[in-house]
Image (tube, rainbow, N blue to C red; front, side, top):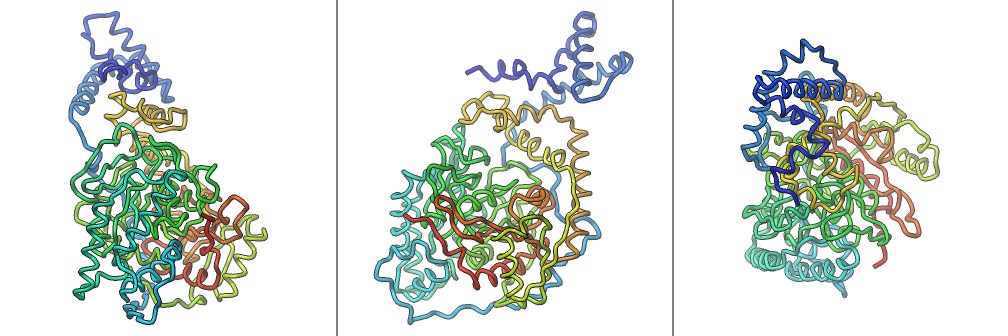
Length: 558
């Protein structure tokens, strides 16, 4: 491998942006070098679509030298992935009405302990049980936290060779936590519905004592001594961390340094990503729930592939402290689960600010016991899927439950320019990786993989990055106007640009199976997208529908 100093300029893509005018720093008295510098600036201008006259280039030469010195000064300062820029994205623009605050959900009463619940004859029957069922057994002292920990650890080990969904196990920590939680229940200390419930965390979340690899070979030995905020919150509520689940390298796809994570419905197929291991393990009955993250589809896509019921929360609803950064303005953390009810239980433990993540805020989350369907306006994305067999049946089910469904259209925007944010912010977050040449260690080295995309991002001028974010403001305004006509939008996961647009605007989405499984595939999925910060109503709508159907209870045969 080349050294860092040898690796900076020779790479053709890196040599084309501001770095490409390094020759402009040569002494001005050397006319040959001065001419060469002018030629490079002219070429750089053509590359970004701006023609500079000879007179303009002459004026630019001293400025270019100054700019290069400033760039070199920036590169001499090491910035950790955890350092935020001095600005923070908010999904709210001035004048936006916070419509979620108009929905006054009645507070759910704490569930009483059901002493009549029976211990299952075989604990293996709990592999696909929901959190409430498992929790009822724990609280009634019919199953211990230690038993649950051992049950799901064994399941993870049994399936991992086939599905490759675990980066590292946290067995000693899990067993110690489970034993402490059993002792607490014996002493009358109940931490709530997650008390003793096992889970996994996507391996971009720091967990003390365990490697946090980000799915990428350059970081496979990386260890943090402090838990990510989300893991701290879940531990406070009594959840038991069993393992770190796989993610595609640096949060893209399902390929990591240990191989490809598989879809439990069809192990010949990858599980999609980047929350690859979290979705695969939950779908396979190896974890009751897991934590994923999404920047542009990383919760939705593997949940579709694996048939999970999962929540991508509103941007800023969950503090990301201790999570790998890919995009400061788009990264979100959320639960991958079996149902809307399970997602509500986990989200209740996760949401809120922590005083460190500048984008995170506290907003109410009160899940009602029930919802009146007639009070909810459902917008249906206009398109051919509403006329298909599964799509039309799904809409009929909503209407039979009393929901008011109306076809709607959403404003169309060119999303590509705005999605430059991910590429540019990711290149900044992994600047040192690119410049050191260690990006060669990543498994995927294709045109659409991060090593190449990070290099290409250096061609995006700062002016255009800001222009893309100004266009994003227009998108946010347009979607806010459109969402005045409905409370929840239903749509196919990847139709109409909604996935990209709502990741840019920050709206929450719930993805769930709604059809019949194929011979070697999960059921088809549908998305419910809600108002900003309106997870309570969004999850209540899905829960009402899932209570009347059984699509989410289907699981692969293992």
